[in-house]
Length: 402
Image: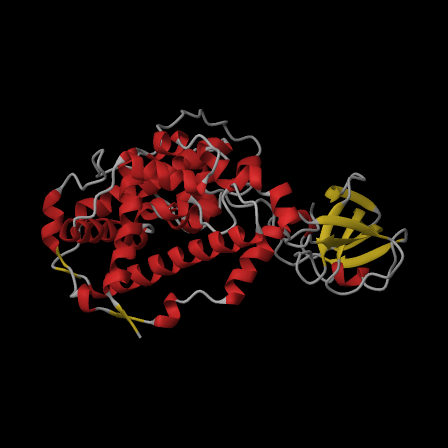
């Protein structure tokens, strides 16, 4: 509604692709994030799509949408996940990684980190109690309805239509001090909330700077009840999806995943900092920038927009080339990572086959048909991803931790 400062959520490649990435184990990151840096590649530009597709200039010609080709996430890679342009390997000199010294604290999984992941997992199974016998306090999540008006006239977007909406005081972003005015009231009360719209309010310029009244009803206070992690809970709720049957198995799996993430992050922080390039892998960088644009084109199509409609919405880029150039830094990181990963894997005889990729994906998404990922991202992309994980693991094995 108009009371909210921000609206639609961001879209990740994983969400576009299958929706299955939403069902990751609590301890793992998504394939899309690890695979191509897709979460980074979309950057702010893709995030800005939000609700823009829903608002077109009145009287403007409706653009004809042509469905773009699916992005080629395996661009520059063959079916084995190796660089097609092997000359790129001549550009990098790996550090003396067998004598590398890594921070022990960066590699150590703490009890607090394990507990945080457990809490996150349990939060997925929390239930809500509707509390109606106390006053609203700061920090509460509250279900409310409201009808907004300016000078006694209701305006579009300022009415919950009796459907109720959850807001959290101090967290949810509403105009002015709307939510703070709920404090001290009790469920069942209906009262006026008086606010002033900001001088700049692009969501509805007719409301800019206007005083408004929202007739607000507090339906109930939302209190979340989180279950306790017990063997009984695990067997009842986690066995079918994750294969867990005991608390010990949950903790072991979470610890293993956290350790893998730390190995990956620490190993790649070292390799990126210490590997030397005689020149940038230009062709690979250009391919990644093209991939970024292809990803965005696909997202825009899903929103019902063309690139021509989208560019003015950014307020930053007037041409596709300017937008494409904004991806250069992230594309450079991805391209160099691919070169380093293959050079390291060649030096250490690290091999990744189809079975290794399948095993990796089945570990991430137990019980799912993981071919959807290899079909969409491509086996080459997936093999490079798994190779990067194995490279970090091997580095940590060889290095000293101090």
